[in-house]
Image: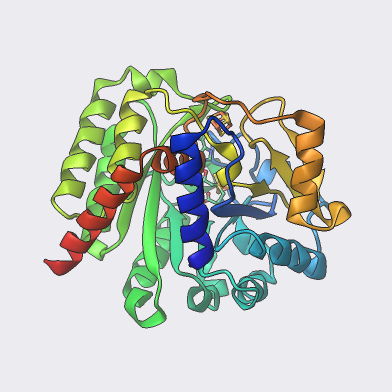
Amino acid sequence: MNKLLLAYLRNAVRAKFSRSQWFEPMVATLYVTPFCNLRCTYCEDFGAQRNDDYRGQALAGEKQKRVIEMLAQVSDVLYVTGGEPTMRADLTDLLRHARACGFGYLAMNTNAVTLRDHEGVLDELDMLVVSLDSLEHGRFDSVLAESPGTIRAVIDNVRWAARLQRDRGFTLSITSVVTPYRVDEARRVRDFCFEIGAQFAAQHLSIGRLPSVELDNDPEFHRFMEELLADKRRGLPISGSELYLRRTRTMEPYACTPTVAPHVDWKGRLAYPCRELPNHIQVDMLAAGSYAAAFAEAKRRYGPPPSDCSRCGERCYVELSMLVRKPTALAREALGYLRARAT
Ligand SMILES: C[S@@+](CC[C@H](N)C(=O)[O-])C[C@H]1O[C@@H](n2cnc3c(N)ncnc32)[C@H](O)[C@@H]1O
Ligand code: SF4
Ligand code: SF4
């Protein structure tokens, strides 16, 4: 993880002593497929109803592996997502390749519906992130809602994965999108995480790439975020830094450093300066030949990233940007982690 540490230190020094916006990559996110087997009502990019629109777009195995190699040149950490990653038959092979390319930390986000068909991924991952918003209603998905057996299967798969953490050497994190007036459902998922020995992460609902105003106006949401902070201080497994958890509640400005979190889609296109700005551009990494060449092309076409944007609530960008700008907060997190392990 030397590359990550060095990039962090250089970024923190740059943030402290200069006005530069050129921050080095720390965590790369790769969308391995746009296909999905669910239809979560809030998902704006993917869902089974959109699969036909994406047909034939995802890179085949060898090209996808080449993109993984390019990302390994600049980042120690790879976060695999989609669409639904388990829709790729070669998922385990891709993760194994990522490890062979030198990634020191591999994480993957899944809805876990068919997780057991890809058991091999558990041997490759450091972190398995399963999305689960409710123990009763699935994820407002019409297919799930009509077949309660599927919801039960997801929960069974989560319990199964939780039991395998120690033997297979990964950490399970459950992430819930918190939606207005349904905060109690996220509370129940949090308690379920504590019961099965998984981490719990809360995500702020986005609408049109912006944090939901209705959720911000729900006092129960604010109470819940305070509870999570208190849980974390007590050493309970709440995912996310205190800085990030507080910001998710207050939505205070934070001056994003989007280039710390490069996002690459299923066609191998780097999003610049981030995936969330409506005017972002995309550069084909395979055509460019390397991450550095794709980044240089993006810079030339778009110019520098914004210097004071706080527009979206996307955790990958928000959390890394805040920690780059506040190294003392990272040190506090590390101490809290060590204290929790010692008790
Ligand atoms: C797009 S999904 C891809 C991975 C996988 N299909 C899954 O659902 O875990 C990645 C994450 O984005 C979250 N997400 C999707 N739409 C969202 C929205 N409108 N607001 C907040 N989070 C959202 C999902 O809940 C999931 O945790
Ligand atoms: S499972 Fe993930 S990708 Fe699929 S619709 Fe739901 S949030 Fe979107
Ligand atoms: S805050 Fe969001 S929209 Fe703004 S630069 Fe960062 S990632 Fe992009």
